[in-house]
Length: 463
Image (tube, rainbow, N blue to C red; front, side):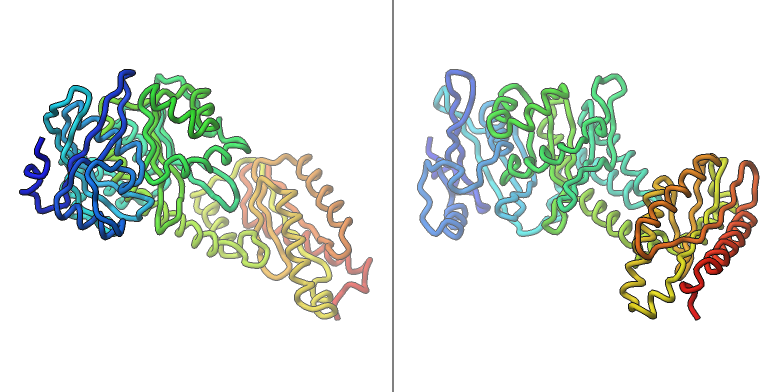
C-alpha cells in the first residue's frame, strides 16, 4: 500500500496506524506505519529526532489501553471513531479522528489517524462531537448549574449517567489524600442488581485500593475493563483492585478520575455497563467528568466557606450566629427537634483569672480543651460557643437518665484536668416546650451553679 501517496492530501497531522492480530485472537504490536509532513514536524518538535516509519506507537504517544481499543475497533471492526480526550502524561487534549483502511494483509489491520493537539480543553471542539453526546452532557450541566440543592442534584445526575451506561452501579467517590479517606458523594444502583451500596465497601482499608487507581490509569484519561481479557490485564497490573472488583461481582467497569486544577478530587465509575456502547460511553463520560469535576470543586469550596462562617475559629464548635439561626428555625417550625430534648448551658469557671495570671494563650487552651470535652460527651449533638466562656448544647432525642449520665461523664473528665471546671444549667423538655423558655431556664440554672462554685472556691473568682 502506498501510504505516502495516501497522506499527501491531508493538511492536519495525519498518520497511518498498523495493528497485528495474533493466533490466540488478541491484538497488539501497534505501529505508526507512515506520517504526513505535519505529523513528522510534530514528532520532531516533541522527540527531537526525525520520524521513522514503523516505530511502535508508544514511542510517540503514551501507552494507553483506551487508545489501543480505538485502534482495534477501527482497524479490525471497521468503526469510524471521533473523540476528544485528555492525555494526562502530556497535559494536553487531543482531537482524534480514526478511519478504517482496507488491508492487503490477513492478520494486519490499518487505520488512518488525523489529530490536533490543544494545551487546554477547547469548548468548540467539544461541541462538534455527536449531537447525542452533546445533548447528554448539556443536560448534566443544566441540572448542576440550575439547582438550589447541589448535593441532591448529584444523585439525579448519577442516575442519568447510570441509565446512559445501562450499568448496574454508578458512583462518584470523593478522595481526601491528606485524611486518607474516601466518601460517597452520590450513587445509583440498578433496582434488580445484586450489588451493595458503596458504603458497604468503605472500610478503613478502602483508601489503599483507591490510591492505586492513578497508577493504573497511567497516562490515559480513564480505565475501561470490558471483558475477561481486560480483567486478565488488570490482575497483572493491579491485583489488589482486581480482587476487590471480582469479590464484588464486577464484570466490567469504566473509571474516570475527577481532576480540577491538577488535583484529583475523586473518581466516577460505571460498573457492569453495556460494553456494546463502550466508545459512546467513554466519550460521554470523558466530557461529563470535565464539568462534574468543576462543579465538585465549587461545591467543596462553598462547603468550606459555610464551615468557616458557621464555626468558631478558636474552638471549632458552631458559633453564636449559627446557634441563633438554629433557634430561629426551631421557633418558626423549619426545624423539628426530636422529643424529648434538653438544652444545656456550660460556662467555664475561672477563665478571666487564667487569662490575667498566665496570658490569653493559656485561656485559649482552656477553651479548646473545654470544647473538645463537650464535643466528646455530646457526640451526637451540636455544640455552640454562645460567647466568651459560655457554651450551649441542644441535645435532641435524649432521655433524662441519659442526660444525667452525660453530665456525670463531663464532670469526671473535667476533674482529670488542672484547670477546666464547668458551671452547668439544664432544662429537660419532654413535649411541646418552648425552646426560648427552655434556654432561659437552663441559663438561670447555670448562673446559680456558678454562684455556688465561687462561694466554695472564692480564690477562683476574678476581682
